[in-house]
Image 1: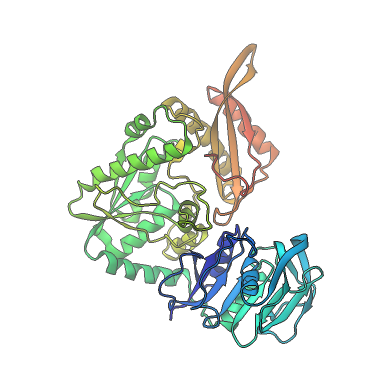
Image 2: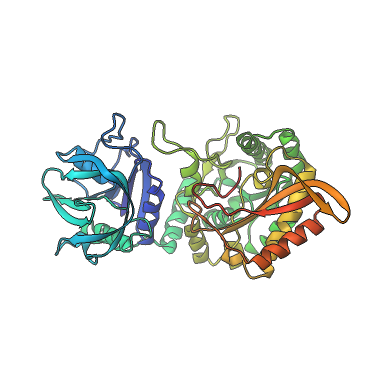
Length: 510
């Protein structure tokens, strides 16, 4: 039996946070849609049921088959999961008189319970539900209450099954991490041995077995994900890795040459390919965000197909896909997750391209990728680089894309990013960039009336990109940056700052 945790997703906005909190305990967790249970459950030592926007009382309520889980493996139901275990096992779930949302405090905690060890009366929890458990399931024992929620936590007597109507995965639940540790370590007996060093060792061995002596082509972008993926593959297969850095014409200013330079000392076999004209020509006249992503992804594949033919006997295409890419892009058929946007490096390859895909980072969050890179001795200036979208400036130019618009945005972006570095703000920001808006704005420069472009600046703080808050940059910095952009970039006469968080907004505008 493996040291893994299975998280069944019922569509909650917090499901990814459950996975993150579990991994912060150095325990590997994996999310699966509730209607796509793994055929082999033996690799999972504990199971967690997520929350959901659905009601267990609804006709279309998510209803998985837990016959091979409940009573056989340690099981924790969170919010909807707790209500589900109650409703379908002899309990009673009914609409709450008032919607139970936000902070609450435990008013009763049953003494001597391993599950609630370290939690006491007054401990803050976070509620988010409109239904509530009026009667516990058969054989259940109440473990905790709040002022408004009598059955805030319970267990099934005689089996390792637990339910809580609050969310331990959010930071507002002050002892949530301790509760998860009680369940996973003290009750389920999982070992806390999933570390960056262990990941590197295991992944390198798996890559050696998977690839053997085959040749692999990897698209480098200069970013954290592709760089760490390259180093893992380099450790596993050495000279059989062929890295390609494609200039899609949508990179930051001078990025093509600077990225090639930064890999010189890393021992990687890297080739630069300037395909900017090919990308811009394919994008001509297209304004739809999804279509632009698909076009960029399609040309990207075509370029790699051309390069693959130049590498004799290449069998694999490596990608720096990470877990949030997959979560945001791939919706279970009939499952609870919504597709937020497509990622150019997520999904299958066209039939004509005979390369198999290898994705060594596909189950890691961004901060985990950085820790893995650090464990391999990679330099801070690479690991600390802000995320940059695969489609590049193509999704930061709202509307159609032209070479002129790219040149304008490259200059604006360079002023913004260079300014963050000069002011010592770059490392305090998780991701930053500029957007060229499809808006012409009236202005006055000297004695002349202008009608030119508006740009939006965006800077967010985050851990993994799943959620993000806008950064309160100093007014003096914003003032200086705005003046520099308007004075130095011809065609721009207005600068705005985006103060939206994710959710409800995404980090990128398209």
